[in-house]
Length: 241
Ligand code: CA
Image (tube, rainbow, N blue to C red):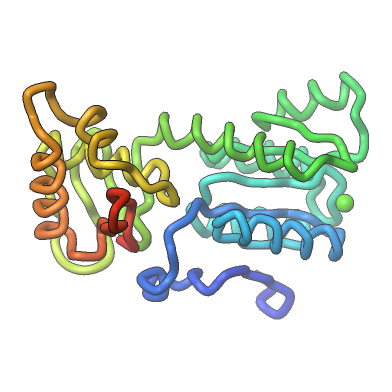
């Protein structure tokens, strides 16, 4: 690790600080162009992402292996380890995080090489900012829907086992409905869900929105008050975990 040159974005790299930071998807940007890296950091932070930035392939590898990210944004032309090679190495090490590759070249052969290396998507520079954000959202959505584990900000929800592990204290077991409710909220941490919508997604026809409130209460009792936030007049959203 080359500590002096390591750049880690956001205030939430240390698990203890997650409590004060709104929970957004965590993205690692690997980009050697200083200006573009700074632009991406600002853009993605404004969109609610927690952003880490690496300035070359080595740092990218180090950060990607050292922390859990929801998505990786990798420039193809990098000093140290080249972008495609970085993706290949991460896949070999079992990192399954979705990767969007940025490239200055846009030939078909180039694209195939990137996809073969294990990248999910490919965007040619100069890119449209809205398109980049849309592609990231699409990748993220797929990733979260397939995820076996969800980051709750310091703690993790193991979906199949319906268990919350990590950080403080003992593991917490959830009932099927508690788990389903938490999943719906945690998959879109920045979205506010109306009680009717949550009722529709998680509960049976016979239940009323009171059931949603009851299960939010159960989740808070098991996982702490801040796990779910009440948004007055609107409904609920994911809290700080
Ligand atoms: Ca570059």
